[in-house]
Image (tube, rainbow, N blue to C red; front, side, top):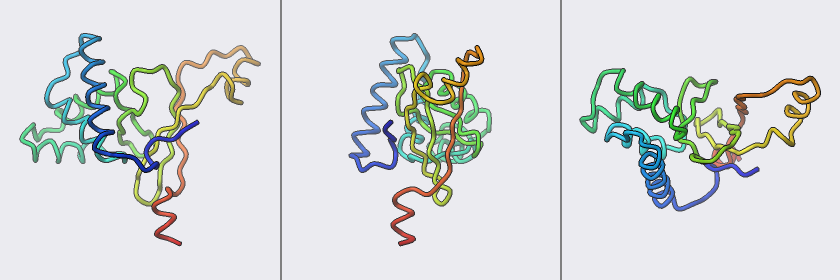
Length: 159
């Protein structure tokens, strides 16, 4: 399991690579990746933390892309349905998907101090939850795994 979000990396290249991937994925799947949707994803990718719809809306409004709540909610709904973003239930906020286009079971590591979120790819087939489900004949269709703690940067500040 690797967590994307707390690791040191070339952030500009990361954002550019994920945006190219998103454009290719939308083109391949015949999805309308409008300028508002693209900018919403770009903002989520840039932040590497969970953003609420109104946080996103404020940035979209600054860019002249709309100032009414439906603008943000429609963009977020599209991104989630397209597999380009996830909703973090515990925060009622959204984060860009680090593994878009791949069949995966995400788990989220949420820093309670700075709201940074890292997405880790987990595998139900080899985990205890998957074992338990199989033992009772239950077919898992969707999971949401969210762990709250303190990220490395916030740990360093506290030290």
